[in-house]
Length: 293
Image (cartoon, rainbow, N blue to C red; front, side, top):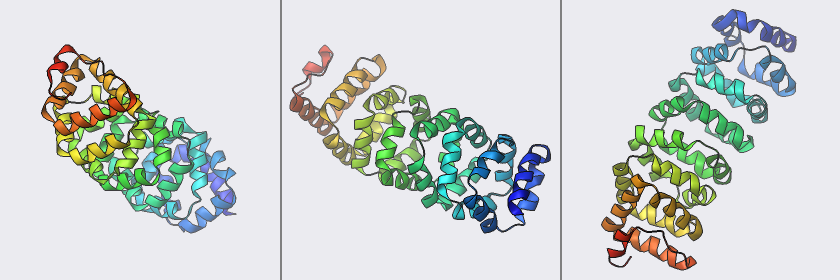
């Protein structure tokens, strides 16, 4: 009976808008999710009838109820929803209030981690690229340590995701919320970040090109021990290629030069990596006057 009711409800949601949440909210979340878990194809049928904006509005109206649903629904069902309906999910996520989204993420980290690990990286990358504004708003509402925990626990998957994210989205977040990004760095493990750089060094170089140079210099200087640990683990070829890309860009060439001059530990670390692979940085003439370069 509940299965038939849910199917009928799916066909009526578009016209009813936010008012469809009232009967659902009076039901047991466990009863709804047990029916969906036993009939996973139901979600696909219902999605075909839904308006993404209406669902976003329902989530905004009843985030606590949605959180209860997330605690008992099979993560694979949500994963399939994301993988099979990326445009619908991107539109829906774009309509969710950032504060509600942040609350759902923080209250259901284990569930979110399972969904991420099972989702196709290209599907989630598309979701992120389609909603850059939401990503920045989420940053204001989420503890960076929470995000770092998800990244640290899904390092291999994050490498694939990072290689598909638009550099403008990442740079926009860092420029807009530098203090949040500093908090993220404090909670990430150097090994995790170095693995991401090894997998997507070109992306990292493109991101740096779009950042405020003073912000980059400040972060490198303020987290020198962390930076050096990352550099030690980054592949030498990847590092050389990334630095050469920065040197070829007028804005970031000056940034690299200033960092090399002002930060001897960083200079020595880069120089050691270059020697290790027998490569040469494509350095401008002015670099050759720097001691011990």
